[in-house]
Picture (cartoon, rainbow, N blue to C red):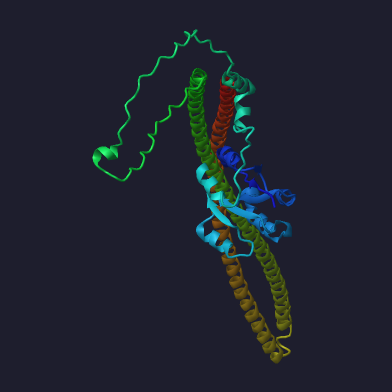
Length: 435
């Protein structure tokens, strides 16, 4: 089991905000997606992973489950972080077998993230030969060389003025014998000796005090330059954020216009469907009209057949009358019979004429009804065509607005790219100033 931390997140902004603090606290690797992360972990050297749920299109949970199933990563600690997951969603995931050891929410402050990960990941060891770490590389070799040259103290011999020769020793006068304090106070028991007086030691003045003051002045100057550069970077960052918000607004307008275009297309599709249904109904009515016309032709043919049969009956009647007149004197019974036959034929003819008139009236009424329905269908079709024209006009207007918004969005994107270039130039300028 290693001591490194692996961070898997597709959010570049999050990595940019937390990369410096994580690298200063832990031995950390970064990956912008879940692809290949499992094999990277199984290669060894890691003690924990900080995994974003939304990484690689919401594949964080699946990678967490794969880690828990891997026997090589049984002791690996997993910390999940998300900008969209709720407490209820985390609670459901915590009840599963492939649960994580720590659940975090975005956004987080860099120091708070480091504090949350400290129980899972050992802190980064400081190299005694390189206490500045990567800061030395950021400041530059020239600055470190100048720092070493100023810390070096030249060994210069100190010249003291000549001292006069010592005076010959003088004879010391006899000193009176000291009387013990106990005797003066009338105390027969000897007193304990007094403790020696403690004299505070004065710290020596370092020989390179002037060098240190010069070094402190240079450090303060460097801190001032860093503050100015940081203020400039913060201003650039604010401009980038404002442009990003403008881009998000433009993106929202673009999505709104796109949704409007999609709604118009759906309405056009509905109208097209209604037109297709109307066309099918119109075809059905036309087919019914053809059928009705065919029935009318058949009935007309029947009427014509009836008229032919009527003419035939009339011819037969005329022949019968002629025969009746010729045989009037011969057979009265036959005459009566012929008259009855003629009466029957006349009755049949009258009934056929009545039926013909009734059928003709019914056909005319059916034709009028079909023509009225066709007229209504034509009116509805014309109204739908006018509605389609209005919708197409609205669609053209929405397309024009969408093109305008797209142009504005491209301008915002170009402005963002310009600001990114200015930010990189500011960073290079800051590094140059620090060097």
